[in-house]
Image (cartoon, rainbow, N blue to C red; front, top):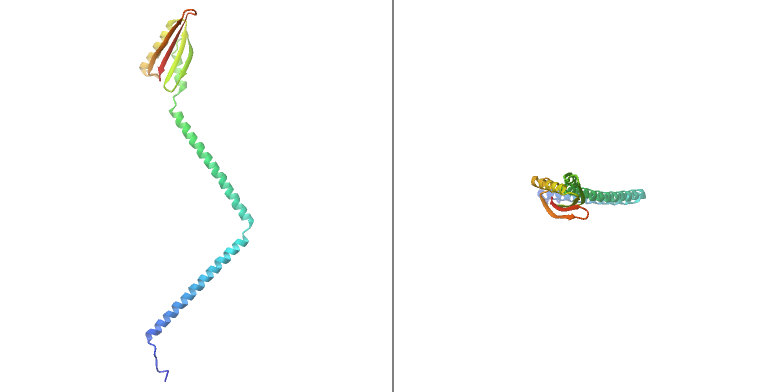
Amino acid sequence: MGSDINLLIKKDIKLLKQQKRVKAFRVLAIGLLVVILIFSIATFLLNKRLSSPVIGEEQESFLNQMAALKKKEVKLNIINNRISNISNLLGERTDIYKTLSTLLGKVPEGILVDSLELTQSTADIRASSYSLRPIDSLISNLIDMAKRKEIINMVKLNSLDADSAEGKYAVSISLGL
């Protein structure tokens, strides 16, 4: 008599089968998680046991080489920066050789240049001669250069002295560059 009575509805059988599947998947997922965990720990422990001191030495050597290369990189950057700054300064600097050769090229024969001082924007010439003609020629040459804006743009006569004992004349001229 008990076999004819079915108290379970067909829907409940489907639900039970579905719950059994979900339970089986959960057990399988937890099992796989445990297996992966055990495999990871075993791999870690094996790696720790099998790692030789040679690998550690190689790592230390590599790190030392990298530190040395970093120092070289810093030095090269400093050198490149200095070269760049020097190049900029050389580009901005006036050509002293050209200035001197042009100025001294305008000094006529018979004049002795006692001193020549150059700064970034001025030049001071102190010269002497036994005659006033070469001093006149020097002053005229410098004034012509200033008119043409050839290296100099201003001529200022500071002094003109005569030494009667030696028969010598001295001139001091300031030039604006």
